Image (cartoon, rainbow, N blue to C red; front, side):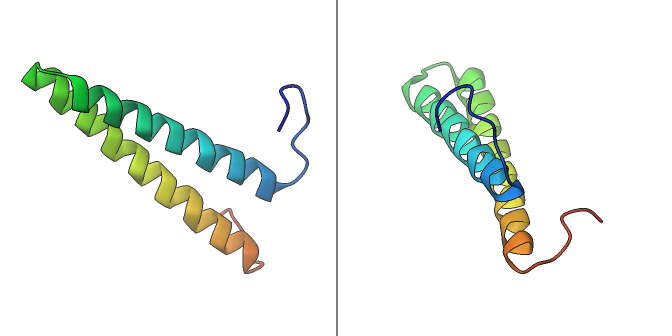
Length: 73
């Protein structure tokens, strides 16, 4: 997707969202792996785990969409 392009479908929006969550997950994982301060490392680990939750939520939404189910409710 080129910046400035309009997202046209819920599926496209969810795929981009999933990609962004994966990037955030990888970012926090990399920071945590290179951090030597225990409480900061723990914070990065916590943030990484939050991104996993977000990815699962979006993946579930994609499955619902593919099955023709409502994403709301």
